[in-house]
Length: 97
Image (tube, rainbow, N blue to C red; front, top):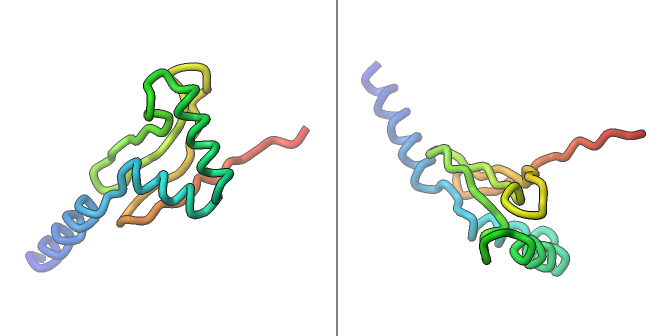
């Protein structure tokens, strides 16, 4: 039982240490979407209330949630998640009319 608790503590510490930040998520978007991603990040920064704060991060210690908007013109929308140094895009469900 003690060994299991130690292993869980080590895993939790590693996840907290490798939790990605906004810069890592921006690099992920630029790598995945190329010039379109770079331009969209710039536009989101331009339309946000604070300069260079178009992408926001909710830190849950072991993982992070990234979103844009909610503080100015743009409505809040979820962009993705980050855990263990990796970022994942959020799947947007769209209704068909």
